[in-house]
Length: 326
Ligand code: ATP
Image 1 (spheres, rainbow, N blue to C red):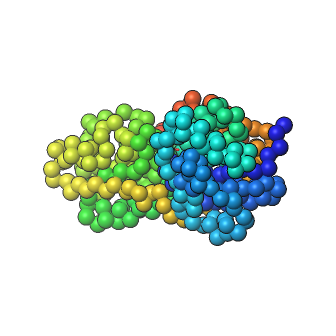
Image 2 (spheres, rainbow, N blue to C red):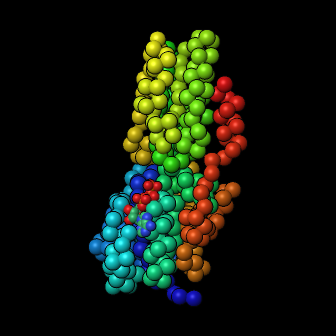
Image 3 (cartoon, rainbow, N blue to C red):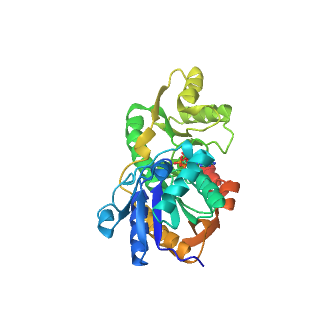
């Protein structure tokens, strides 16, 4: 068993609310276990350039409630290349750092697996992405907050939709995954939910809208995940408009407001638990795993598995949505 005296933590990929709570937990759990903890700036970029500094407990005071990440984040092309990863390893060794904790999404964990395989340095991953698309964990840090942000925004759009008898297509984030769209759609009582995991049949959507028209519905909200196969909210709205020229149709792309904001209590607690678990995992001699949450309990998921398997959408949620959107 290798003794770990010094660790580094970074955030990478897209920012997600709760990343600060995760950093805080790693820093404090590390110090609690008599380790030195270094914060790496700008994800793998900072690892390659050696942009890191030792953190004390006070450095993470008053951040648990803030969105974004105090360590900043980046997407690093250089880390995709072995030369870049070699530089990163050398910088870590020179600073006497024994292990690394990374907080990010699928790409971040792929990079982490590559790095630990090549250089035999323990790396623990924490799932941090608003997309919730990582296999092996029920939730990712940031997803719950983003979900609540979407719900709040769509509730406001509903007021306008109802006041003007309008049909709104609301596009939410999710290029490859419909988790945000499906749950927010259920939570907002959307009339239809279009996600990448399910083929979109425009005919079905149109016949549904036809029925709504006959029933004199005062408003309709269609939630569209940005990766939907029918081409995104603008494209679908254009196609629908052809057959419903008398409808007042509007499109709203929620965009980057979904990433920011104060993390929800759920995200703060989960990030705190996962941060402590990540440090514990290093003490238990773990080397190449993501700490995740299944049925509200902490789990260790090998990088190989979380990267290899695809997290599917929950079928019972799909059924619920189908029943309630008629
Ligand atoms: P999000 O889900 O928010 O997009 P992410 O972690 O998936 O977050 P990416 O941009 O895909 O975001 O990945 C973050 C960084 O991880 C990349 O910029 C790159 O530096 C590194 N990375 C991704 N894939 C690999 C890989 N196969 N090998 C080495 N490094 C990688």
